[in-house]
Length: 353
Image (cartoon, rainbow, N blue to C red; front, side, top):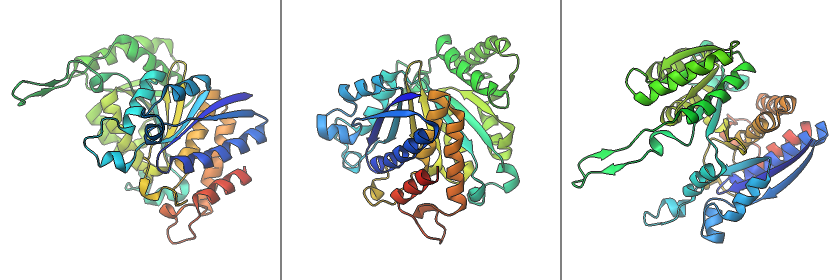
């Protein structure tokens, strides 16, 4: 297969971890006989420094030409520490999601056999956890209008808005993913209180007969927040709206014991972007010490969700688990053993693929 991949390294440790993902992707391509073309473009603070725009039109065109986008991280202290900055790197992330139509955030949570002791939960609760959230990304209270304050500044308001179309396209992704997994879908809402949640539940109930092989459960968001900790193995695929998903995915990411290792995808009808869930970690930039595994596992998600190449994806996840088991890791998880450089971990993974 021939693939065109846009590389958006971004800021901080982004360029370093993306470089390791490229090594791994090239190794997988060679192993399975694929041809890959990479095209790099700036985003975030790096793009502001070059063009004054955190998501330049030229970068957008690179993304549109690509079959998939591998993205590093956004953020720079010189903007974080300047409250008067009119343009911020994070604006590039929101612009990118909007312009590329990335309406579904896919956040898996799974455990690493050699790291289960790092989880704050008991072993019997987390061993074998393998769930995935589909969070609606471009609607809900984060984007609803009107919003603001009254003239006295004593009251503030935000508006939570969802259309049937927005819910349907996200729910279908969840149903299709469930069909390829354990055939269990959980719709997370607050339908006992919120009108938007009642629309979510009604829409999913209407779609369910189209997927007779998938068992559908409906749970309130507060119940899911508890059960994620009590018994996360009860879940397979969860679908939910923007605000609930933002909170629950961060909660779920801690289950594995290492938030920095978790990958993610942001999917649209025509465009697909893959990124680690960690930030730009500017303190480690340029030191060759950042953990690249979240980005590399995001590349595994790319093979699965962008190209439907599940064996290639499994090859990456298997070699990552082997590197963890054998202690080929960066200093953040070395636990007293030898700490490898970012580049050394990438070299080892690529060579062993």
